[in-house]
Figure 1 (cartoon, helix red, strand yellow):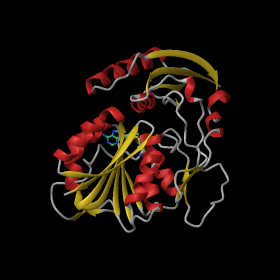
Figure 2 (cartoon, protein in one colour):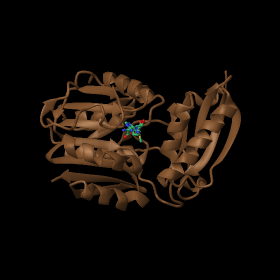
Figure 3 (cartoon, helix red, strand yellow):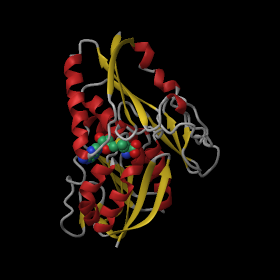
Figure 4 (cartoon, protein in one colour):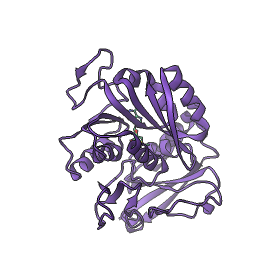
Length: 325
Ligand SMILES: C[S@@+](CC[C@H](N)C(=O)[O-])C[C@H]1O[C@@H](n2cnc3c(N)ncnc32)[C@H](O)[C@@H]1O
């Protein structure tokens, strides 16, 4: 079987959004080639893999490939993706000098090819992400395994924002917390929070593909009773307006922890709702923040009634730990 590969050259900043557009345009798979800073040394201390040499891709740039089945209206896909990329500028997202090109490829070239690169990743001392098709034996008693088949949803842990967020969760979860994970993707953060000792996680995503993937991964980890996955836009599926109450979705408001690994432009849209959903002194982990949006998110969080407790970085991405006061 043949597929059509759409390659898009863009910026590191807009890679997540554009890969979402490809999914939404019907791609049967999306690959993001690693981007970063020229000559930067990468952390391989936990055996992380990197498919491409950073020096192949200019600083701040990314290459995204979407795969479309034979018979797809390629012109319609290209027009839709182009117009959505153009819209990003209204969010002040720099997409750079976008270049698009098509190539016809044999299925074997890509369908499972990426799996050979997705190996167990030791994110931290306590968390390891293990692809379901790989064998892996934990190296220590405290090491917890996140079983994952990301399929088409975002969140393999190879993206810096995901591993950064997992490491940040590790500094926040002490045991017994109820957590809301906004933009759950593959469900990786929800599963990570549970492995770290949370009591229950409500995992929300706008994208039905993500909801299906998260549901499957939650089940693979035997956590279907402890993680509730729901399709929804930000926090709109819960009523944050009134005080204490059972949401009927496994968590009771207000909760002690909310985590969101979404782009900065989206993070700032629902700070008020997160504030209402959190207990006094509750923690909001806001991640997915590219370095040039750090000040914006920080100021909006402070304006929204939070104090900044900590900031964690990985490559050019930042996770902010904010406490409700
Ligand atoms: C960068 S991915 C993060 C996935 C995963 N949590 C991780 O850390 O790897 C962002 C996710 O947010 C979801 N998303 C984007 N906008 C959203 C919204 N308004 N409401 C809920 N989810 C949203 C996307 O569908 C995507 O799955």
